[in-house]
Image 1 (cartoon, rainbow, N blue to C red):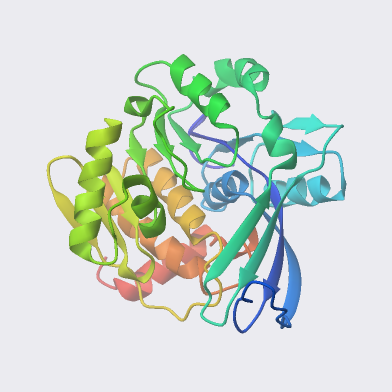
Image 2 (spheres, one colour):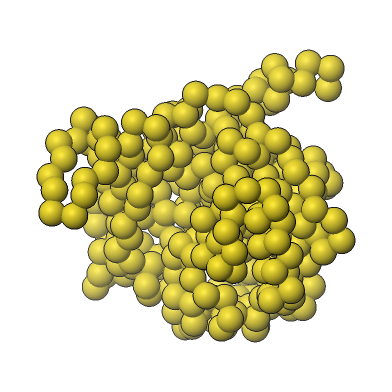
Length: 314
């Protein structure tokens, strides 16, 4: 693998994604005929690790899987994407996590999660891998593993390193976490609204919600992922908009994970935060142009070609 030694760690979920494409979502009590079905490797943690690995970063995945056919598929995907997974926990008494995903004709998705082995990422596991996690420059977290484990980890980490980026998905109250330990929180519009109870339908609302989350959490910055609108950053001093890229969407599954993984890679390569956000927007745009989670993550050459085509003078 390329990149710096002990550059990026990802602690989080590994899921098999069971995806149904349909014209529209069913109403309660209604049956809608699906257009197609597919199975993909997913889980927000594993997706972000794959996003890093495909961009030639040195990245390691921490989490848990069952001992079943789904686990084998997930491990193969990590291996093919240059992700180190030597410290994963293999649970013999439960199944690998699952996500049931509905995708409509606009590429929007709804997801139902079943935790499985992801629920076994407990304090005992955190204690076992903590000495290794302390040695990374960057640590990516999400909310598909137990919140108690997240709190324990953040309390035990050294105060300054690694720098921690939290993707608060699925959105849950953050009050029980020591959020001042976080370097950056990266909700999407819906998660930001859930976390703050402030409408994010317009830019003014996003700005108010970002500042509210900074004040409540004590984190240094909030970066809102806003799909085709790009991203919005509040660093506690000013509010900035980073426009997205116009593409034809097919499936928005894991676009936020492509964004977060790419963001971490760019930062690990000493890019400025604005530069990193531009790269992350491009990766998210590429991701939505094809179906699936991990298989939709761009490789380094794809991302470079995409950016060069839109910024020919750079």
